[in-house]
Image (cartoon, rainbow, N blue to C red; front, side, top):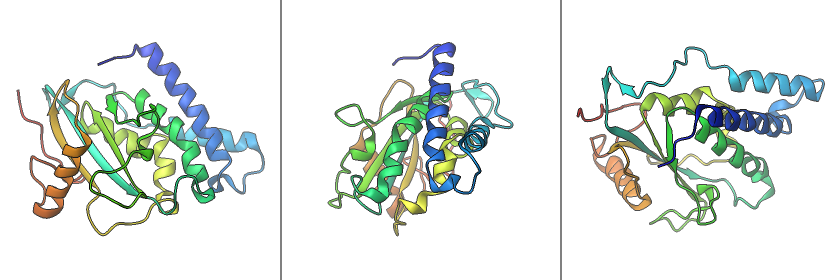
Length: 216
């Protein structure tokens, strides 16, 4: 497992923020602004505004934990990724992934065979090529939620209906794993299926119904 220095993380984060801002300014989200400078200023302000964010402590619920948090999120695209209507989403993949990797508490994410985004990885047991997985590991739930809701990722989360269909089954599952272990996509899919069939358990639970990590 590779841990970056604080300086390296800061440089990567700054670069990701700039690229996400540039992508957003070429989008519908930026329409109506008078000029490019106004757009970039507004987007960067949203990207770096993180009220209440505290330095990462590696703790959960007041005690040290030797467990990390794994999460799987499946997406069902509205169109193939090489289609014009998905171009803006595809353009944002690299900077958003870089933003995730620079977020305190990030540990690992699934990548394609070429090292690219997991959006191009097939989902086991799903014949529809519009399905795509997002599988990652975080030090704790707070770090994951910070990235989802309070980083530049939130700009695109608010627009998810433009690129994703709304499935009629659960698409997100989280579970605790021993620190240093990495999940497999096959196991993650099994946990998601178990959640869909049997409800939340220590085998897998939804983001809004978290389970505490095992105490060690």
